[in-house]
Amino acid sequence: MDINLKYKQYFLDNGLRVILHQDKATPIASVNLWYHVGSWNEKPGKTGFAHLFEHMMFQGSTHVPDNMHFQLLQSIGASLNGSTSFNRTNYYETVPSHYLEMALWLEADRMGYLLSAMNQEKLDNQRDVVKNERRQTVDNVPYGTWLEKLLELTFPVDNSYHWPIIGYMDDLDTASLEDIRHFFKTYYSPANASLCIAGDFDEKTVLTWIKKYFGPIKGGMTIPPVKMDISMLEQKERRLVVEDTVQLPRIYLSYPITGYGTKDWYVGDLLADLISSGKSARLHKALVYEQQVAQEIYAFVFATEGIAQLIFMATAMQGVDEKQLESALFEEINTLVKKGISDFELEKVKNQIEAYKIRELQSVTHIADSFNQAATYFGDPNYLNKEIDMYLDISKDDITRFIHDYLDGPGRTILTYIPKHE
Image (tube, rainbow, N blue to C red):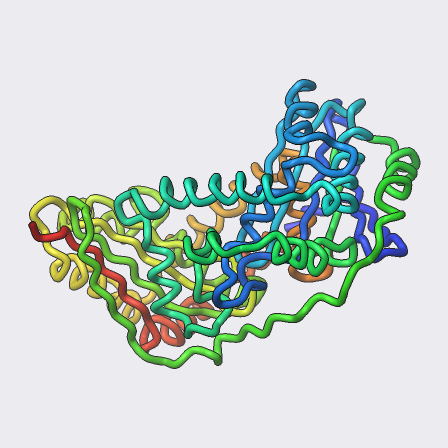
């Protein structure tokens, strides 16, 4: 399918990649900035830095007082946020187009002039915010530790995917101001960033602004590479049973697959949708409606570099134990291995994916984010225009091969939560 979203790409002398996509349909513009740094760039004993630093980026810079970034943009009706993942950290502001220069200046100021405004008080404040976020989203919620435990179980201790994005409490406690400064100097460089502007703007004017505000920022240090390949993982089964304060058993079943951008990643992502998306999908139909052993079941794939994971999550129905639930789940996976999928299922899921992807691209905020994702992971903004075809070109033979290569072997992780016995 021909998407063909138009763009222009430039590079500043300091290495900053600039992507421009004009869309004058509405008077808004989105400023989107990706840094190619995430939790996989951390080290044992120094986890959570990428996410902590995302918070620090909103605490003011040399020319922007504390919290003024949010206040200025919210006062004009802008939407803005930042997020941290395994491989990247991103920031965006979608603003009325006549405020585009202000948004660019704000992003440039914190890229180039954050260090002088960074101090121990701000670090301590945001450390407490992140620790509280961890309590609220991980430590004190049912099944909240699932991702952390799944990563620890799947990846060796020295592997860069072994620890959670939010980090460990002890590491957050010991993070020093010097640690954070070093992290900024290493990774928050124009040469490690991609800036995309999408929406209503004049190209000549916006390029002038970008060169004015971002051009003087120094390029920074060489980025330490991260090696990640599926061959690093042993082909064996890994199991852990966790007694927790939960009402119902739940199973997380993970199969390591090749990383985002590979043929097998797209096959795995499509297969996850095919078997679990919607109430008529085979997993929901079999385990929830027919056998009534699960009250919910999903499958999904992480978009991570080098190694990804196809993950199944199933929560037991009241009165069903974890052994019954696991048996039913593996029975459906074995059926996949033996019988494969139907032409109807494949056509249906392709139509769903195509419609979903096209709907996403109706938003300039999402377009800007998608161009940056393509540029950051693949070095090619035009990859965005090719991605739907990566799904539409998948055949039944591709899926059959994928099922036998990944689901019909010992390489899997099984994490089971059971109610804690009083």
